Image 1 (cartoon, rainbow, N blue to C red):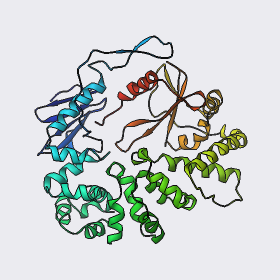
Image 2: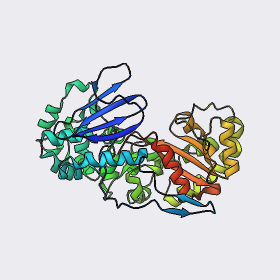
Image 3: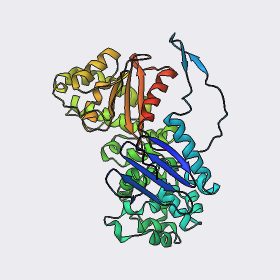
Length: 410
């Protein structure tokens, strides 16, 4: 077994090797599907990967690295070096994907996290592949059965496989959802890209409220954005049917609930500015954006003195000479002033480690925010130049290359 703990990725003889600074992981492919991990000074132990192992496979053409001119910065390579971590990871995970049965890989690739448990479910009972097509969210919950029991040892993969033979409403009831056809229909509307334990557990509780079920039943499709709105009582109180319908149609909301984050920030600022007023009702996304922009200006004008006392946690990721972490409230306020944006309103979210903020110095000045994605990796939330303008391609590539060092998922 290789002993090199420097970051890297390799696929060999049906085994996927993942090396980090602290550990080495080995994932055996189909049909063994055994995952073990070794950390320094600790023996090999089995574990369940939560990171993404399968992405849609796209054959890549071999080409010489090209050059791109942007912002008068000169010639800058736009392709990563052949031996970069990003290319190592891509090759290793592509080979792992190709080692799986095609129908299994095609069905699994749509989910963003906890794919390993789905692979085990599909391997244990082939018919669950069809179940994943009919009701991706319910199948995802079944594969992740330990997360839906207060005492996970009460259930097992063998039991979950047996339950998969039952009607969908019975599967839902076993997992703690309402054992009704109405609940099953609601779950079937949720895009597989949106399925996550973090959303499905609160959805299970929210469906006990008939009003939530009624609101979701009238929508043609569901995504992460809609579920995040209806599972938070405060956000639900501010959301109109029109806003929910608009969010349900936004493609990126399948992958991340951006609107709910904006609404949460807006309500927090509104309540701080107007403590005597009730919860506003948001009629549209355009209205939410306008309210957020107005609220940010007033909030910063009123709250800046108090924000200077905020203590921010240490940065989530170590920066570089070009990407510098913002470590204090004063730096956060100054970044907002210098870049003419509302990043200082994120101070409380930074305090709770829900987001991390960095200043990008080169190849152009920009403000960067990063968050954890469902697969556990750090992803770009926003990266904008002054006044929330769009960054150049080379700037985003610089940030992507920095995040590659810490990425583990396919």
